[in-house]
Image 1 (tube, rainbow, N blue to C red):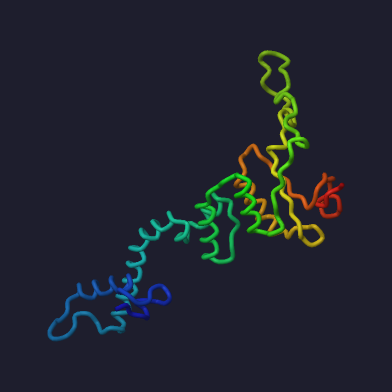
Image 2: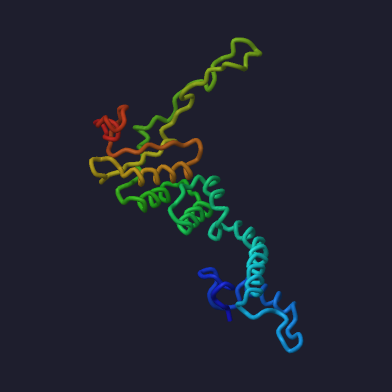
Length: 234
């Protein structure tokens, strides 16, 4: 039966088998010997000499747990001290609590990426019901635009200073059209928009891009101060 108090400071271990500290403490107390001239060899439980023993037991138990602690860091849903590493490697924003951080890195670590329209549409709709994926008809699509990837060399050995084409083989089929309806004033919530962008950046292949719009048409430059930024111009 597990104890409470110095041998088991709450909330680390409650119920079940003895705590790690209590196991070490029992071994240390038993190693001193039980009886010496009809008196306990170890000092009374809770006494000054026994308090020293409890302190040593807690230190030894903590060291013995380090190996288990290190092993648990291999699992995102059990990680503690390794959480910052997972967040950095998976590009996951830090949440408020450790449990929220574990859930976030676990979801990113075990995510199955499927860059197909039905899956993308369902994932985006789960973030906001007003989001949908539009497919462009072939008659209105730019299939390709001829152009060189690199400018011609002036000499056979000219490999430096080459000018690259802006759109050597552009295709609208490689640009995902995301339509976001129902947002107040046509402006999506910043946090939701960041969540959408993180999902698309991690899901779409490297050669694919995306645009987010709140209607049909084309967009003019400007941000926040321009009504023709996130509002389609027909």
